[in-house]
Length: 354
Image (cartoon, rainbow, N blue to C red; front, side, top):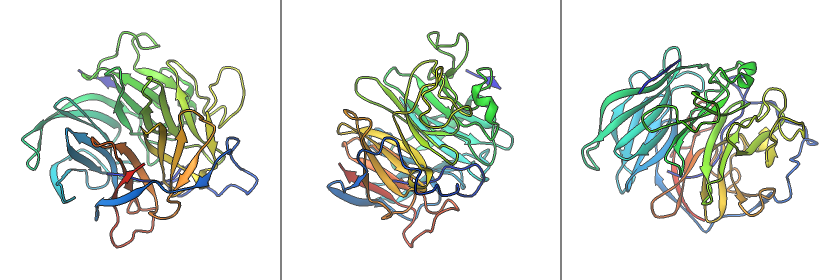
């Protein structure tokens, strides 16, 4: 390891490249006080015909998009037409790996991707103007992260503190999630330049929290509370409130265990109904895109034990959710990732007004 200087729901939790076994009918969520199906006020298709898209970010008003298998970085015109900004040539697709999460900070694009032997975090200066954006030379911020055909994590996002948070899966090495000397099975916290912040919970380490299996969603409430979604194995997927230095239990526990030393999730779901990936906070709720569960789940911030399911089975697998500059929710479908059943317009970006 070397440290150097657009909208709706559903994918998959997995131990192997295939889907998880379907839990029995008795395996229902301990937090299932809601679960009603409802629909936000409107849904608009912003873009279509995308190839295994993974992450959405905004550069001012311009939507940017990563495609996992092609390694392409795209910008979208106002009519939804995609244009290639650049290609991450070192990204190597395979299983769940490839070009994964992206984030924008000031005039830089940050990208997390799977290379030939590791996962890496890089940044690129964004050059040109909307409609003609380009990528400057790559700058490696973090390399040597464990990679595998599954459990690569890959979500990156800037928090309200201005720091860059990075989710890293256990890459199939379960025990590494409990080893704070390893960066797999962790959520990392870095400065925008890729350095370790002085106030991180472990001195000199980018590790912010540990005991994670495959976290793929990050979001913050207005009060600064940090949330993360996580793929479980075959029992429970999770929504967690992330605390600095917290141990979230994997592989010792999965879901709500009520054991000393581990932080329990605030909500859990059977993987067949969830496989939570990207997430966003909007209109007083957490909105979680679900892959295998093929639904957009809404969790109200004032009652984290409750939830409402939207668009169940309507759009297939959902990979990412993010808030656009106009306040709408953009949701990314993921039916062309090798596990879905693509329709003629897949994959799509959905614009939802909560």
